[in-house]
Image (cartoon, rainbow over all chains, first blue to last red; front, side):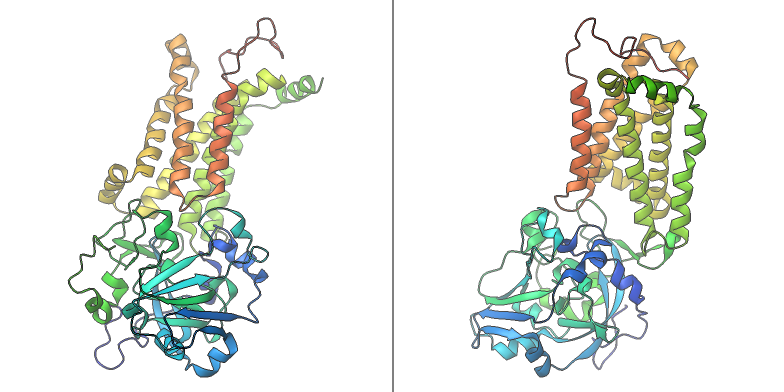
Length: 269
Length: 211
């Protein structure tokens, strides 16, 4: 169990996780707004203006509005979280994020009783994001979580890596990190967070509903139609890197399995 | 005429040069992969680079007939070498997938059966096998007219290869569609009706490649 810290704060950096290097984390990215190649984001993301930045929080909240990034940062408590990151493409990394719990941000806006889901949206700026000119996905990129997933203490908004500001290619200035789900759920460069009653659309699910489910929990027993999810390759192992088994919920089962009690996870993939 | 000058220059280029140069990109890519030049995930990069090279070589092979028919440039001497080198890169692409990527014999078989883009890619490889095995003078002589018919399998190979590339990518991506478009255009050129007595560049367009 990679995440299985007995007692105390189970979500705080399990000892045995050794983070990938800064270079690995910041040069091998999926961020299709900057191109579909793994090195496109590192090459192109410098074009994105991340300051000033505002996040619109709206929908079923007591205090809807545009929240300036600096104002959010003044109110949040930053901490380091060393998390495994498992991409749906069957590779993985370990990233030392800096960030704050999404629950704290949602408290800032005051979630109303009827809200059941949280919808997220990435910035869409054709002048600063060359990838938007190709119709890979319907832009802007959107994601969503069930409210209980969103307020789970493992779910954070990351603003840094290795204690430095998060680079643009990794989702500056703030991005979601949901470590027990495939990486594409952890939406980058967030500009809107909406509390809603109905399950919101998500980009990859809209593109190929048979390949990418709403939940997209890391699950070695449910294969992607085009490849197995039973194993993964840790980035950084070079040309002869072995495949290693993928743990259920990416190793965070102890903390999150209860969220899905009684659900058929093959059906709700 | 420009085509004649190009043909004259090409006549001086020995075919063995292609075979001699063939392994160079593969060795270069392997070197890059071992020394960090292919980025932090070299296995996937090597696999994709080799596959893309194979596809480019297949497309180069498809260009030879229309180049002669419509531009008068005669590259027929090189067609066998281009085809065989394409096959070499398909084999390398497949080996990287088997040995470095999947790493598990049981899963390889499961993947071939279960995953359409791999099934399609494997189909292209299997169609290439008889072509590679009969790309020698003895087979050409032994098979006679049947050789040409057999080698029309090339069209099936390129269509499957293009489809494999489109299906392998996540999302609706431009690059594999450009490749597929080029292949369809090159195949469509073969449907242009021939005018009688209008052959340019000398000789009937359906001459067999030798040497």
